[in-house]
Length: 251
Image 1 (cartoon, helix red, strand yellow):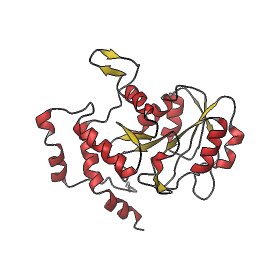
Image 2: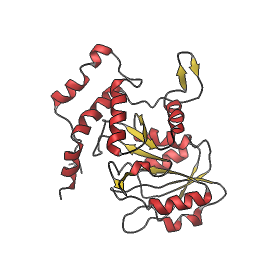
Image 3: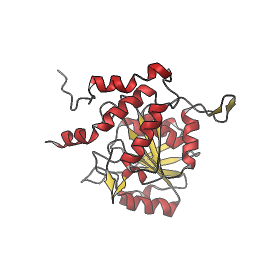
Image 4: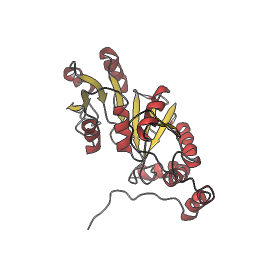
């Protein structure tokens, strides 16, 4: 018998039906429609971040963030993570270099990062674990010293804050997963948060075939867009997220 650790949260059936019923009027089912835009803004506000780009899942979001670096080389990360983190690095043509974790929170040990940096290192990809955040201050200092990019895997850190800032504001980018098992989900889904507005243009091209107009394609992108039904589920679940977080805190 399989005993699941968690069960996917769902809004009231009538609430979801009410949220999606206007899609039958517009027939706009994907390609950044009204639900997508509404969820995007709602998450910017809720997560206290400057900007966000939505994706069909967290893995493709992470791949997009790595691709947006426009470089290939070594990326320092942690072995204590879901396989997706490492796979994203490899699939985008870079090499994962594993750094040990610190024993209390299982996040990457910042005191061991510098010894792994070489002339091939292009970025650090730390992972927030079980809601415990990495030492973002130390990591930021190391990154600045060696001129490295920092992409956080924040799949375990939805709504987490540090110094009254959304955790998605730290580093150059952060990936959030909205998979059905997460405390907040869009059935499948994910996002990249960031502070640099220019990153929005890159991510949009990567996730939508580089399409910039009816007859204009400027980048060899893929298809990683969140559809309207996913976004609608996110809008419903976001209304109840505080209650869901409270339930998961019960021991």
